[in-house]
Length: 212
Image (cartoon, rainbow, N blue to C red; front, side):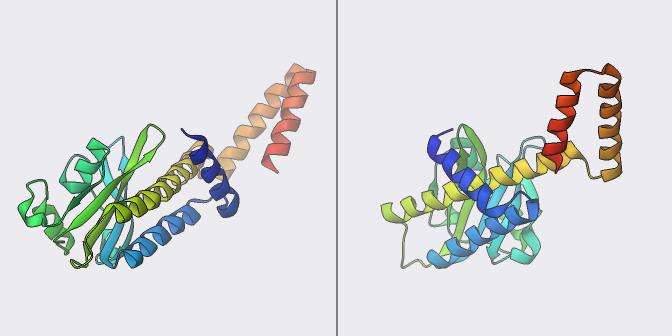
Protein backbone atom coordinates (compact mmCIF):
# COMPACT_ATOMS: atom_id res chain seq x y z
CA UNK A 1 0.00 0.00 0.00
CA UNK A 2 1.47 3.32 -1.06
CA UNK A 3 2.29 6.20 1.26
CA UNK A 4 -0.14 8.34 -0.75
CA UNK A 5 -3.02 5.95 -0.07
CA UNK A 6 -2.10 5.88 3.61
CA UNK A 7 -2.07 9.66 3.73
CA UNK A 8 -5.43 10.00 2.01
CA UNK A 9 -7.07 7.33 4.15
CA UNK A 10 -5.81 8.94 7.35
CA UNK A 11 -7.06 12.34 6.18
CA UNK A 12 -10.47 10.89 5.35
CA UNK A 13 -10.66 9.11 8.69
CA UNK A 14 -9.83 12.30 10.54
CA UNK A 15 -12.47 14.29 8.69
CA UNK A 16 -15.24 11.73 8.68
CA UNK A 17 -15.03 9.83 11.94
CA UNK A 18 -15.52 6.10 12.06
CA UNK A 19 -19.18 5.12 11.62
CA UNK A 20 -20.44 3.08 8.68
CA UNK A 21 -23.19 5.51 7.76
CA UNK A 22 -20.67 8.30 7.24
CA UNK A 23 -18.61 6.19 4.86
CA UNK A 24 -21.72 5.19 2.92
CA UNK A 25 -22.48 8.90 2.53
CA UNK A 26 -18.94 9.43 1.24
CA UNK A 27 -19.46 6.76 -1.43
CA UNK A 28 -22.82 8.26 -2.37
CA UNK A 29 -21.21 11.67 -2.84
CA UNK A 30 -18.52 10.16 -5.09
CA UNK A 31 -21.06 8.62 -7.50
CA UNK A 32 -23.15 11.82 -7.45
CA UNK A 33 -20.17 13.93 -8.48
CA UNK A 34 -18.93 11.37 -11.03
CA UNK A 35 -22.35 11.23 -12.71
CA UNK A 36 -22.55 15.02 -12.82
CA UNK A 37 -19.04 15.60 -14.16
CA UNK A 38 -19.33 12.94 -16.86
CA UNK A 39 -22.91 13.98 -17.74
CA UNK A 40 -24.01 10.36 -17.37
CA UNK A 41 -27.37 8.73 -16.76
CA UNK A 42 -26.04 6.78 -13.78
CA UNK A 43 -22.95 5.94 -11.76
CA UNK A 44 -22.43 3.17 -9.23
CA UNK A 45 -19.92 1.68 -6.81
CA UNK A 46 -19.77 -2.07 -6.27
CA UNK A 47 -18.14 -3.73 -3.26
CA UNK A 48 -16.60 -7.19 -3.62
CA UNK A 49 -18.03 -9.59 -1.04
CA UNK A 50 -15.13 -12.03 -0.90
CA UNK A 51 -16.95 -14.63 1.19
CA UNK A 52 -19.88 -14.88 -1.23
CA UNK A 53 -17.77 -14.05 -4.33
CA UNK A 54 -20.31 -11.43 -5.35
CA UNK A 55 -20.36 -7.76 -6.29
CA UNK A 56 -22.75 -5.67 -4.20
CA UNK A 57 -24.23 -2.29 -5.15
CA UNK A 58 -23.05 0.01 -2.33
CA UNK A 59 -23.84 3.39 -3.90
CA UNK A 60 -25.88 4.39 -6.95
CA UNK A 61 -26.62 7.79 -8.45
CA UNK A 62 -29.19 8.37 -11.17
CA UNK A 63 -31.10 5.60 -12.91
CA UNK A 64 -31.89 2.73 -10.56
CA UNK A 65 -30.66 4.38 -7.38
CA UNK A 66 -33.81 3.64 -5.39
CA UNK A 67 -33.85 -0.09 -6.17
CA UNK A 68 -30.27 -1.22 -6.70
CA UNK A 69 -28.42 -0.50 -3.45
CA UNK A 70 -27.86 -3.79 -1.67
CA UNK A 71 -28.52 -6.00 -4.69
CA UNK A 72 -25.75 -8.35 -5.77
CA UNK A 73 -24.54 -10.64 -8.55
CA UNK A 74 -21.63 -13.08 -9.17
CA UNK A 75 -18.35 -11.19 -9.21
CA UNK A 76 -17.06 -12.68 -12.46
CA UNK A 77 -20.04 -11.66 -14.61
CA UNK A 78 -20.74 -8.60 -16.72
CA UNK A 79 -18.52 -5.65 -17.59
CA UNK A 80 -18.00 -4.80 -13.90
CA UNK A 81 -16.87 -8.36 -13.24
CA UNK A 82 -14.44 -8.17 -16.16
CA UNK A 83 -12.93 -4.93 -14.81
CA UNK A 84 -12.58 -6.54 -11.37
CA UNK A 85 -10.89 -9.71 -12.64
CA UNK A 86 -8.52 -7.98 -15.08
CA UNK A 87 -7.87 -5.00 -12.76
CA UNK A 88 -8.01 -2.74 -15.81
CA UNK A 89 -10.47 0.03 -16.71
CA UNK A 90 -12.46 -0.40 -19.91
CA UNK A 91 -14.87 1.54 -22.07
CA UNK A 92 -17.70 -0.13 -23.98
CA UNK A 93 -19.61 2.19 -26.33
CA UNK A 94 -22.14 -0.41 -27.49
CA UNK A 95 -23.07 -2.90 -24.80
CA UNK A 96 -25.48 -4.76 -27.07
CA UNK A 97 -22.53 -5.78 -29.25
CA UNK A 98 -20.35 -6.93 -26.34
CA UNK A 99 -20.68 -10.60 -25.29
CA UNK A 100 -19.50 -9.78 -21.77
CA UNK A 101 -22.61 -7.69 -21.12
CA UNK A 102 -25.20 -9.52 -18.98
CA UNK A 103 -28.37 -8.12 -20.53
CA UNK A 104 -30.64 -10.57 -18.70
CA UNK A 105 -29.29 -9.44 -15.35
CA UNK A 106 -29.59 -5.76 -16.34
CA UNK A 107 -33.22 -6.28 -17.30
CA UNK A 108 -34.01 -7.56 -13.80
CA UNK A 109 -32.90 -4.17 -12.41
CA UNK A 110 -35.28 -2.22 -14.62
CA UNK A 111 -32.45 -0.30 -16.30
CA UNK A 112 -30.59 -1.57 -19.37
CA UNK A 113 -27.68 0.76 -20.24
CA UNK A 114 -26.24 1.10 -23.73
CA UNK A 115 -22.69 2.18 -22.83
CA UNK A 116 -20.38 1.96 -19.82
CA UNK A 117 -16.95 2.82 -18.50
CA UNK A 118 -15.82 0.68 -15.56
CA UNK A 119 -12.75 0.97 -13.36
CA UNK A 120 -11.55 -1.48 -10.69
CA UNK A 121 -11.20 -0.03 -7.20
CA UNK A 122 -7.70 -1.00 -6.13
CA UNK A 123 -6.39 -0.38 -2.62
CA UNK A 124 -2.78 -1.47 -2.44
CA UNK A 125 -2.74 -5.05 -3.72
CA UNK A 126 -6.44 -5.61 -3.11
CA UNK A 127 -9.32 -5.24 -5.55
CA UNK A 128 -12.16 -3.91 -3.38
CA UNK A 129 -14.80 -3.36 -6.04
CA UNK A 130 -15.67 -1.45 -9.22
CA UNK A 131 -16.74 2.08 -10.15
CA UNK A 132 -18.95 2.36 -13.24
CA UNK A 133 -20.35 5.31 -15.19
CA UNK A 134 -23.28 4.50 -17.48
CA UNK A 135 -24.70 6.08 -20.63
CA UNK A 136 -22.56 9.14 -21.03
CA UNK A 137 -23.53 11.68 -23.68
CA UNK A 138 -22.40 10.02 -26.98
CA UNK A 139 -21.11 13.38 -28.14
CA UNK A 140 -18.56 13.36 -25.33
CA UNK A 141 -16.54 10.13 -25.74
CA UNK A 142 -14.00 9.07 -23.14
CA UNK A 143 -10.44 10.11 -23.96
CA UNK A 144 -7.19 9.94 -22.00
CA UNK A 145 -8.10 12.99 -19.90
CA UNK A 146 -11.45 11.48 -18.92
CA UNK A 147 -9.87 8.13 -18.05
CA UNK A 148 -7.33 9.93 -15.87
CA UNK A 149 -10.14 11.76 -14.09
CA UNK A 150 -12.04 8.50 -13.62
CA UNK A 151 -8.87 6.99 -12.15
CA UNK A 152 -8.84 9.76 -9.53
CA UNK A 153 -12.46 9.03 -8.66
CA UNK A 154 -11.56 5.34 -8.40
CA UNK A 155 -8.80 6.10 -5.91
CA UNK A 156 -11.19 8.07 -3.70
CA UNK A 157 -13.86 5.37 -3.98
CA UNK A 158 -11.32 2.68 -3.01
CA UNK A 159 -10.40 4.66 0.09
CA UNK A 160 -14.09 5.00 0.95
CA UNK A 161 -14.66 1.26 0.53
CA UNK A 162 -11.63 0.46 2.68
CA UNK A 163 -12.97 2.73 5.44
CA UNK A 164 -16.42 1.14 5.15
CA UNK A 165 -14.93 -2.35 5.48
CA UNK A 166 -12.86 -1.29 8.49
CA UNK A 167 -15.98 0.14 10.17
CA UNK A 168 -17.87 -3.09 9.54
CA UNK A 169 -15.03 -5.24 10.89
CA UNK A 170 -14.77 -3.06 14.00
CA UNK A 171 -18.52 -3.32 14.61
CA UNK A 172 -18.38 -7.08 14.12
CA UNK A 173 -15.44 -7.45 16.51
CA UNK A 174 -17.13 -5.40 19.23
CA UNK A 175 -20.55 -6.95 18.67
CA UNK A 176 -23.88 -5.18 18.63
CA UNK A 177 -24.72 -6.15 22.21
CA UNK A 178 -23.33 -3.53 24.59
CA UNK A 179 -24.25 -5.68 27.59
CA UNK A 180 -22.27 -8.58 26.16
CA UNK A 181 -19.27 -6.35 25.57
CA UNK A 182 -19.46 -4.99 29.10
CA UNK A 183 -19.67 -8.50 30.52
CA UNK A 184 -16.59 -9.51 28.54
CA UNK A 185 -14.62 -6.54 29.86
CA UNK A 186 -15.77 -7.37 33.41
CA UNK A 187 -14.54 -10.96 33.08
CA UNK A 188 -11.17 -9.81 31.78
CA UNK A 189 -10.90 -7.32 34.63
CA UNK A 190 -11.70 -10.03 37.20
CA UNK A 191 -9.03 -12.34 35.81
CA UNK A 192 -6.44 -9.58 35.80
CA UNK A 193 -7.39 -8.58 39.33
CA UNK A 194 -6.72 -12.14 40.54
CA UNK A 195 -3.15 -11.91 39.30
CA UNK A 196 -2.42 -8.95 41.61
CA UNK A 197 0.20 -7.99 39.08
CA UNK A 198 1.48 -4.55 38.06
CA UNK A 199 1.33 -5.54 34.39
CA UNK A 200 -2.33 -6.51 34.78
CA UNK A 201 -3.19 -3.18 36.36
CA UNK A 202 -1.35 -1.32 33.62
CA UNK A 203 -3.32 -3.24 31.01
CA UNK A 204 -6.59 -2.31 32.72
CA UNK A 205 -5.55 1.32 32.82
CA UNK A 206 -4.73 1.18 29.11
CA UNK A 207 -8.12 -0.39 28.37
CA UNK A 208 -9.84 2.34 30.36
CA UNK A 209 -8.02 5.02 28.39
CA UNK A 210 -8.87 3.34 25.07
CA UNK A 211 -12.56 2.97 25.85
CA UNK A 212 -13.11 6.54 27.02
